[in-house]
Amino acid sequence: MAKRRDITNKPDQSVPEHAKRSSDGDIADFLGKLGQLDAMKSGGSGRGRLIFAMDATMSRQPTWDMALSLQVDMFNAVRATGGLNVQLVYFRGFGECRSSKWVSDAGDLAKLMTTVSCRGGRTQIRKIFLHADRENAESKVNAMVYVGDCMEEDIDELADLAGQLGLKGVPVFLFQEGHDPNAERAFREFARLSNGAYCRFDAGAAHQLRELLSAVAIFASGGIKALENQSAGTGARLLLEQLK
Image 1: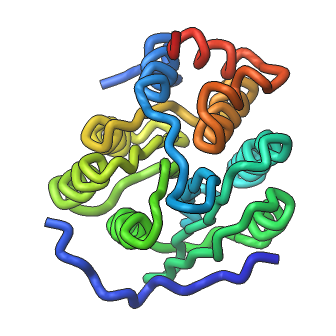
Image 2: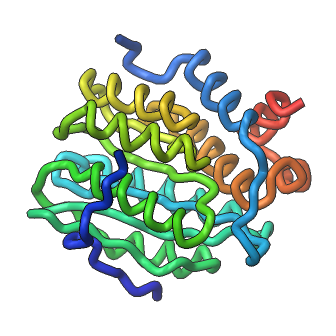
Image 3: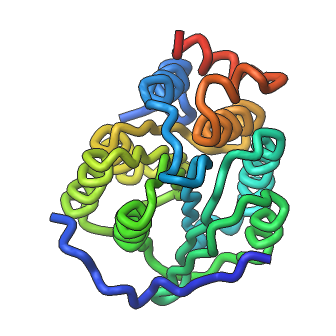
């Protein structure tokens, strides 16, 4: 099982309104943004690197099992490609923010995810963005996925950090669970500034979201060829259409 690493006390680095469910336009925009990315590989390893970050605070408890199921499906979708290293990062409780080691076995990471439970606390998206920046400085990170339901931090500071990630080629794909308008406004801005994309994350769109998450993972691992070789669902097919 992947060992968790506490990043709570890492030193900071000076990294200088809408529908109730994602509309077809949101989905198309999400896939379109993916289609604009280059299929980059991490330096030297020949494998893509994806950070998967989760808000594990108590407000997500009611739909936590559903969310975990979708997220585990995402990792299972890239088993066949064999080209993706994934790191799990999550925050919860009083200042707790942890990351796993980088793993290539989707099963190991899925097991780790199922051990994470929700605890009361405030959001720590700033720590997530700073962590992604540090990891990218060590070795190229191809993309970051973030799943959360609220935003309780300074939006301007986070927007600046998201923009820095965008300049360094680390797009952030933000999935919002629930309908908090403040979170939606912030997440859409972070996606825009990082050259990523935004999408709603709810039970009513579970099948569609499963395919979108899978498409993100497959694209990060091998680009267009990996998607073409996948016995594809709608998400992969739509993504391929955007890439043509």
